Length: 252
Image 1: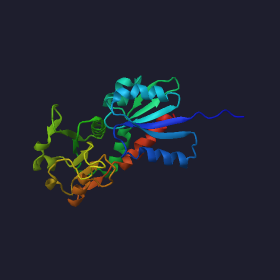
Image 2 (image 1 turned 30 degrees about the horizontal axis):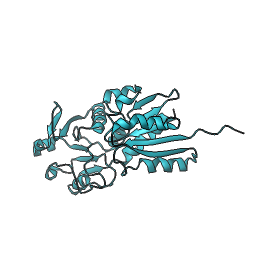
Image 3 (image 1 turned 180 degrees about the horizontal axis):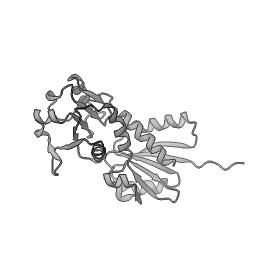
């Protein structure tokens, strides 16, 4: 008799993550590839302090994790190693459990975002506003820098040099910054009526609005952009691309 295949567990680490499509995405992937000995589950933690216990309880089966809001930065101290790109970014969204039992952090958001954004870029898209300053925004700014796009973060409490307040978003600013990226959770299911507080009256058909949210597919933020004739894109393709990159890392 052949040796029984080791059971592999993958999962999404986050808080209040019932909205996420990751579990469904990987479950469908396992079915399509006829992978019998694996499952993808939600690890919904109310505090990152519970991470060690979670790992300990699942160590024999854990093979890989994705990380979402609000733990992309907070999980870093719990890891044994961090990939060079993830270290530069300062945020992790993929964890590999190595054969030696070590936890190594990666960032596949960069891959997902860059490859989702690039086909949409036009001549006027030279400056971008990133709404939000959390872990996801770090991968976005890293990508924009690589693409040669100048950017500023928009924050409710601007503290750093590259940060501005929402109230500073004048018509003049929006004329210059023709890419607007929502990296905040504002507008995610179930609070779909919410949207970032920017002056939508200054959005034109020269703008590109990109929302990292994919549930709902058309957020209130994107709807406003669509009504003004802007190009719009949600985060579903980014999710799928980063998920495939995670899968490659876990199985490399």
